[in-house]
Image (tube, rainbow, N blue to C red; front, side, top):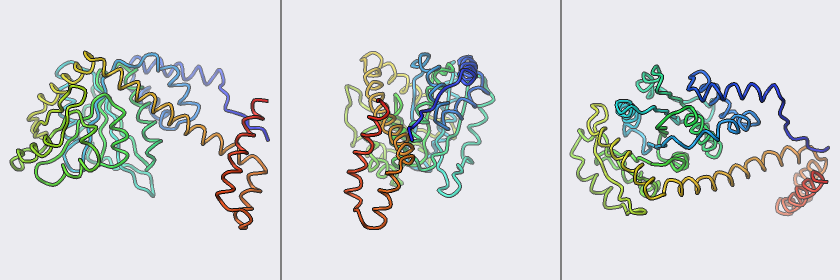
Length: 332
């Protein structure tokens, strides 16, 4: 059976074009629907990003990440307030942990932040990780594009924890802010996760719990200058708003540094290169598996391995040749 790729219809294209035009006007309902389409993937995502992509690239994107319990959500809440005081439109993507059984996200810690979502110049969206790092990163990147196209000046991506998901999503932004706590061992956990390499700005939050000097010293001593930028180590008490203006000052200073030295464009090009490769492999895998399962030879090969007539390594080699034949038949 010959594989038939997805086709687009005029009606579907028209609906997506209408949705895209509403997103470009900053319509919050359109934003919600557009991000849901991005999360779902498939042809809908392709159509939408095709419409919006030419209008992206203006927003400055900031990842706020670090170990659990360091007060990131409160810090994001106060950072939104400070950016709004400076007249900046703010979009927020909050990555939440998910139950491996239900797929549900735990959004309780985000309630205080959602108060800002009533503002026209702010849009906040939570996204469940569902344990799929590659899929999450792709959905997050495209959600950033949707918020960018909607006219947001700043897009903040907040992650939970300090694992592989957080590192991958954090590297999809222009600036990465790493948040730790004073003298509780969190900075060690963060640095083991590689945040010392990806962090552009470091924040010791909850600085009123105990003297943060030791933690600030430990963090600073492990940092190195990157392309002429020495990552600052700041202290905040987010719940009181203390130190947040200085954090936003540092973010804006870093944005100017990137633009003045052409580093922002260079970083984006590297991210695009990685994104294209990962997205292409993902699509190739999905489409190839679909096509293979339509072939009689697939079931025959699978049966041989199950019956121990063929080992998995030899079968994998035969699969490569089968995929090559599918490509030949497609182009014939």
